[in-house]
Length: 474
Ligand SMILES: Nc1nc2c(ncn2[C@@H]2O[C@H](COP(=O)(O)OP(=O)(O)OP(=O)(O)O)[C@@H](O)[C@H]2O)c(=O)[nH]1
Ligand SMILES: [Mg+2]
Image (cartoon, rainbow, N blue to C red; front, side, top):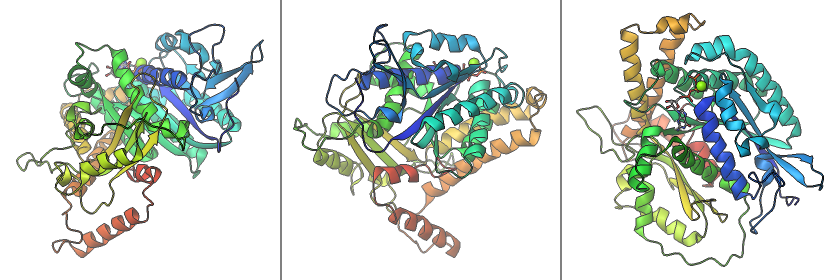
């Protein structure tokens, strides 16, 4: 069936890089196909759109129109570029029934391998692949009406996910030169004590420096937090990798749901029993995708300031009433709520929302809560600590310098990471009363400017999202 022609076509190009990146994104595409009723599991109708519900689908955001089959049915093609320096890992993805949907020319890889090293992927084996990727992006842009963004799905721990992603981001930023195309990353960060890769801290610091340089917003995950969600919230034993990827996919599809569906106006929605339980689930540490404590009370001893929510956004999916959603959000940050102190009073209306009536394909009624929380500084410091241990012992530095990476670059990537952490701490430590007497004139001017930025926003989730992801602070 034809997809309904809907409003503006604002396309997004997805680029999935490395083993974890491809596996995570593959689950995202499975969710998208299921939610938009694009068949992937039946040979006869593969890629075809057979709507089963009356939620209008904006297929063009993530899919291209492909060729027509014998029955004249259109085949929809994910707008995705798949990259890896290890073809064997890529074929695991492309040989899956859903793998047939990808455009074959957009599968870019070789068998060089990165040796798990950022520098090898960035300097030695990556450039040729990055050129091919640029060529594919050019072609994708030609097929687009108005490109709104490019998203990267990758891990920062592996050589390919870190180095090749950084290179491709740099090449595309140069190519897009000032265009208002949003770049966003879905990045898998290292988990403390779980590393299976020796040079992970170097890869991670170099990759985070690239994200700070080139990306507009970054959504972070780590396997240890995802495992906790599976075990504590979903009561599973030992979750398989695929389950972790499902949770990432759920977040990715939730975040983009407002772009992919139109809300209906006169819906007869079931009145939902709203209670604080939901607010608690949204705020629960057990449901966080990256292992930090967004409600950290702070500790002078450890030099950790109290965590603050700078800007947040809730993507609701399913049968939610606007009034109920407003109530839940208000219950979270209203004065004297149990979370009140974590919301600085110099940020008015700190939580934006959007409601998408089309539910997630598996979980139905749900909410994805995205927040720019200062506690992420601890994650950055954690990576920096393991980096320091390696660097002090001068371990494996030659692996990177032999591949053309400057020692200073390695050092400055780690410093960048710490700068961003400091910036977060600075915001976390801001006194709650605006323009407090203790602030220096310089600080006052800074706060005033920040405040002005907040006030100039119309409160729509789009704006909040942009705010939550000022470049350099994600
Ligand atoms: N959540 C999740 N994590 C994964 C998956 N596959 C690997 N990882 C983790 O991701 C991290 C990076 O590994 P890879 O993705 O294999 O690395 P890469 O980007 O292919 O880079 P190379 O080192 O060049 O192979 C490791 O810490 C793995 O534990 C996956 O399917 N899902
Ligand atoms: Mg790999």
